Image (cartoon, rainbow, N blue to C red; front, side):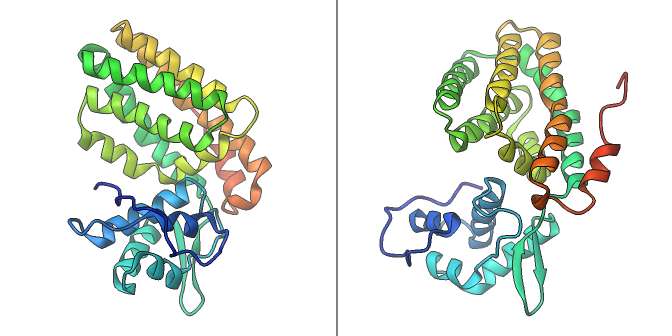
Amino acid sequence: MPRPRKQEAGCTGNGTEDPFLASLATERLDPAFGKTAQIYTLIRNGIVQLKLPPGAAINEREICARLGISRTPLREAILQLAAENLVTVIPNLGTSVAPIHIQDAFDGQLVRDALEMRVVRLAASRMNLATERALAANMEAQHKASATRDFDGFYLLDEEFHRLISECGASSTVWRIINGAKAQLDRIRRLGFPRPNHAETVLAEHQAIFDGLMQRDPERAAAAMQTHLDRVFETVRLLIAERRDYFSPDAGEVAQRAGRPAGA
């Protein structure tokens, strides 16, 4: 599903400083596609990118006004988000962004581990000139975003990097499966970027994956990908200590049990 198309910012704002509502001033829904799917994408992206942080209220009336929609497609989108544990709906009280559920994040990590480890090997064997150029341009942009501490831009380039690898090694369908499973994990990833040296570490890991792919070496690319994926366990523990208010009450206990068993 394509993202809703952009339009020039106009008079839809009411002066609010809410970053998510402010971002809707430049959005309009594409009439060629279903409203519910587009609204779902907008809100999901807002949650993952922390424009709607855990605990934030979902202002349904204002969202409808900004997008020029009725409540029906918005409510349908919210029900989908609730099924993913991304929002909490309390009858007669409203809807808010759910805390980060660590078990859901680790479930998403299992999907990534199973699929991305396979597709990176395939990508190293199937690398073509178009993908090679796209990855090289992506890496160059990552270096610039890291240097300027453009964390929103870096996150989007990170996503693009993994998408390119998945589509080269397998297909866009496989990437949709991976992406659909990792919303909770993505919130953790985005939350981690401002930490000292975090973006630089991610960039170095991406460079190692890129080097393995450019050398058409499946095992080298896979080893670099495994290091990259496994680091999430350390990141989770650090972020729980630093931003406990963003996580579900059982976060510490679940994180303590989690990790890659020796020899796995």
